Image 1 (cartoon, rainbow, N blue to C red):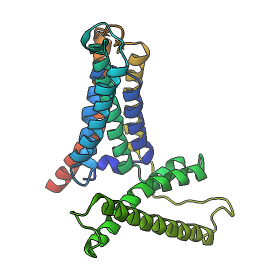
Image 2: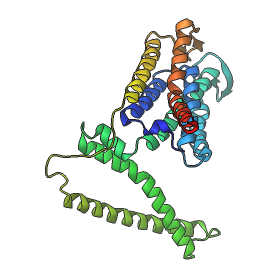
Image 3: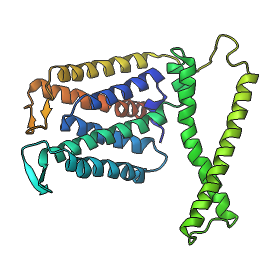
Image 4: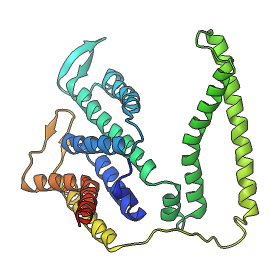
Length: 294
């Protein structure tokens, strides 16, 4: 699904994702991190071509296992032991800290999924090309190569299956040899594509003179309004974090600073910042409906 907000100026979209990522990583308050996780999952499911609950589970399970099962076995901070393993206490504080940390990491992963959809290669080059053209081009190509590798590997595997070389009931050794063969084909294909890309860039004069670029992005009044709203809302939340309104201690004993009026205001601003794309989407749908009725 393509949201109207994603068609805004790249600087506006990148600013929204930047604020959500920074605010998520700058606090260990479970309320703020929980809000960020909910909205990150919602946006990642909306921008995906299909519901990616499988990816969400595959990325969440290892994180939760590491931070809530493995980490407490080596870290014994806290004053509330739950049980003992070899005379080593597994404390509630460590498990809760691992749980909150898992939510934060999972939220950041989901926000980067949204980033990969909303900030494509063209927008990335537009945003960072003038700062460092070579670095921006390299990062854009690397980001593009990852999904291209996966797509090409699926194509190679399907061809091998269609030719009868890959069988589901094959032994582990046969599967390993088939995987090695498919990986060799993938590497050869990738190297050939890299050579073709370098020759194409050289024939077009890349690196010979001053770099020029063309883009269709135009800054509009709506982009100014949206950017100001995002900056003001983020400034209020940052002020709350700077004033330690969201302080949360996990060791040696868990303690959450009570919320006051300004803390609640910061949470409301954080939620309002997170729903900015939904507000823009609703405004566009309302305008289309009104114009249609006319």
